[in-house]
Structure formats: structure tokens, C-alpha cells
Length: 87
Image (cartoon, rainbow, N blue to C red; front, side):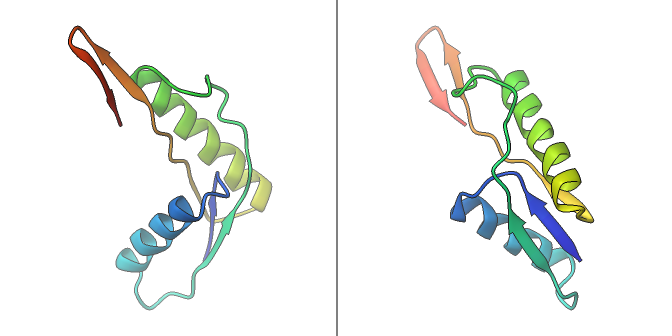
């Protein structure tokens, strides 16, 4: 089974490998990292923007790699009146 991760970040690739390995422990997995655009700002400032970026990455990755699954992981900041939190 081929899984395309919309990033070349080794931490994100390892996260996908572990997650898919738990769901399909006996399946031979091929995990590939692909540099793809998120289509959102470099530092998403809302959950909505972060989710949009993750979905965009997954969609482009799965098509680019002709994979069975696409994974998009996008971090972001959430602003509050008292400060901001990284997500």
C-alpha cells in the first residue's frame, strides 16, 4: 500500500508511518514524502486555515504519487485575547 505524505519533514513522515502501521500492521507499506504547496499562508492563524492546508497537501500528494492514501499535516497558531497557541 502506498501512502503519500504532503511534506518532506521526517517527523511528519514518521508520524504517518506509525499511524498506518497501527491500522494495518501486517500490510507492506510504502511511505513517500513529497514537497507540495499547502495553498495557505506559511503560518496558518486559524484552525480553518490549517485544516484547509492539510487537505490541500493530502490531495496534491495522493495525485502526485499515485498513492492509495494521501496525508496532509499542517500546524498553525490560534490567537486568543490572552496570547496565541501553536497547534
